[in-house]
Image (cartoon, rainbow, N blue to C red; front, side, top):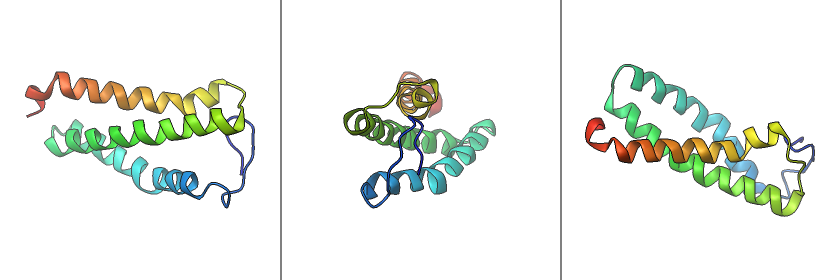
Length: 106
């Protein structure tokens, strides 16, 4: 299976990371779209779901970034930056926004 950094690996070697990637595709991405639609309809549930998903983005993307840097020695390309560290940034930005505007959300 190919990675954004150009390397390939076998899911048998990294079961936890591939499980997290599968959870991203099957659960987190669709739930993100649902939460964004709920936010557009001014639903409190949308803000709360996005808050929970932000923790996932920070945690999972930190794990992927550290693993990629430690074991794969990747070529830092634009696609690698979008695939791994950008998710951390998005998660942190939403959490900061949520904390700063906590009174407005509730």
